[in-house]
Image (cartoon, rainbow, N blue to C red; front, side, top):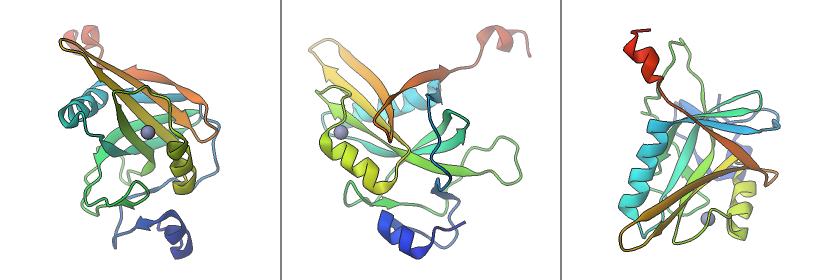
Length: 178
Ligand SMILES: [Zn+2]
């Protein structure tokens, strides 16, 4: 499914011939929760710390399920020229869950706030609205001489903060070979 050209233009999306990712175009759901795997979140944290004190900015890829935004990946944005432009690669190989036709949506973006809080800026809200993002993640990183402090917060388009739920493998189940 490709968005109509007019809409793509409006969203400033650069679409390849056969995109496997697309913007979520469904009815605006009432979101309450963001669910993300610990490994996915930790990997983002590592990338953010690596770039620190520069800002990191990535796409949020996942699926809406009821009131949940299930995040499958944070994707590097290559060749991005501005905060408002989102390029979609056609060779993306998303994680699948055994489905013939896995469907992943670009739910929004996540970026870091070096030496700052998770509070979105006025520009953040503007950009979120302009790009039609459903979910905006912010990762605040503060560093002292010996410690670093990392916080995550996710917001929906009504500017409400969403509960962040982190999923991880159950070590007891793994040990039992379940
Ligand atoms: Zn920001």
